[in-house]
Structures are given as structure tokens and as C-alpha cells.
Image (cartoon, rainbow, N blue to C red; front, side, top):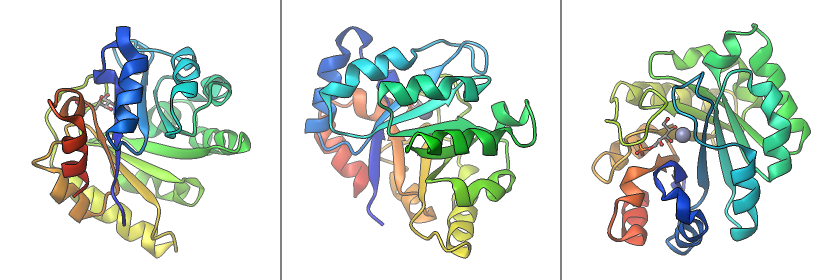
Length: 221
Ligand code: DX5
Ligand code: ZN
């Protein structure tokens, strides 16, 4: 499978976001990863739908909205209207509300004609979301605890990637997107890809690089 790189704009200079988006597209990024934090599900607050609405006209790249928020169902309309292409929501935020909330939220995202995905934290077994795999276009395995960019990759995610890829194949979805989020670097990208992930989020690795295009190319190789 072709590897796709999703740079996280969390690591961009927010005062020059337009320029950052244009540079990402020119540098060979495949998606724009938008880390939405609500100050409750995770401590920091980043941005909401308005950011996606403003960057939408600046790029043809798909906008990958990673919602680190409580009550994600109430937020879907804002991100759909803002022009997100894919919206992912956390298992933990949904399970805190009800057993069916994750499935309902994924179906709501799909009702807008968008791609959807479920996210699990490092301490949550991927098996917890196996029942919603058939609904998902992408599953996201966090390789850091959400909230901050620039953290260290947690290698215990590697067997989870293998389990997710094997399960996707089992249910006849061998091409399902499996995204890894957190601590991805040029040094660990190869083992992450070899385990079966095909979408790599990279915040600091891309934005701190002196040559963004070269870093993106190396992350893909
Ligand atoms: C963490 C975010 C990640 C993070 C990735 O809460 O979901 O997307 O910004 O940044 P790096 O690549 O620096 O770990
Ligand atoms: Zn993210």
C-alpha cells in the first residue's frame, strides 16, 4: 500500500497558517491533519471549525479532522460545514456517553458524505473498536497520549497495528486506512509502515525539518 503523510498543523505557526498550508501541499503532503482540542477531553484548546473553513480554499488536500473533544456528535455539523473530508472521533469520549454513541457518531459523519474513523488511545486495546471497523474508512491508533505535539513514540502500538491490519483483512477490507498519530519520525517510520500502517501523522518531524519536502519523502519511503 502507498504510504500517505498527514502533517499536523498543530506544529505550524498559527500566525502564518495560510503559508504553512501552501508549503505542505508543495512539499508532497497527502492530507492535512487538523488537531482539534477542547480543553476538556484533553487539557489544551487548539481551534474549531473556523480554522478548517479558512484553510479549505487554500488547498486541494483532504482535511483530516482529529476531534479530541467530549460529546463529538454535537460537533460534527460544524466540521462538515467547514469542509472537512474525514472526521475521526475518540473511542474513549464516545464510550463515556453510551455503548452506541461511537456507532451513532460514525453514521452521522457518513450522513454528510464524509469519511469517518475511530481513534484509540495507547492504553485502549484495538479490539474495542473491532465492531465498528466495517463502518470506518480509517482507524487511528494513538502512539502518544493525546494533547501535545512533540512527544515520544510509544512502541507498544506496533502489535496493535498488526492486529488492526489483520482484522481489516479478515473482514474483507485489506485497503482500510490505518493511521498512526504521535511521535512519528524518520527513524521509526519504516517499522510503523512494516507493521501495516499506511497513513502517518507527523507534526514536529515535518514542521521542525529544515527541508519539509525531503522529510516527507523520507517518511514515505
Ligand atoms: C496529539 C496529536 C498529534 C500530534 C502529532 O494530541 O493528535 O496529531 O500533534 O505531533 P507529533 O508528530 O509532533 O507527535
Ligand atoms: Zn492528531
